[in-house]
Length: 99
Image 1 (tube, rainbow, N blue to C red):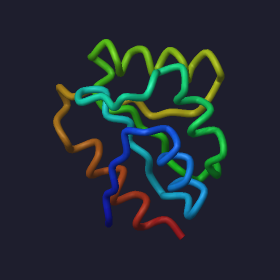
Image 2: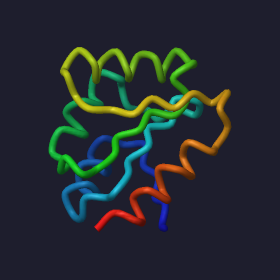
Image 3: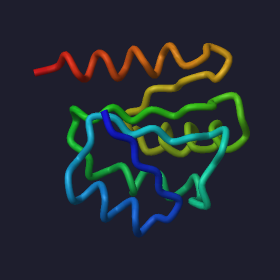
């Protein structure tokens, strides 16, 4: 498992085009300088097998990202910070077991 962070839309597009990851996590608790309205287009080119998770759905930024993704009918997995990191660990484990 390797993690990479980006807070610039151009860098996100470049990284996602290079090699689509198994999981993308948008951090709503420590949000990047990317407008929520940009998230659907940034994540649109990912294959259906990529999990698109939004951490911090209880924050204003996280809720805005969820709203934007939902309005575009884009797939996403909401993750509430109050549940701790266990859901993220579960996602990583599940993707590592996937063929």
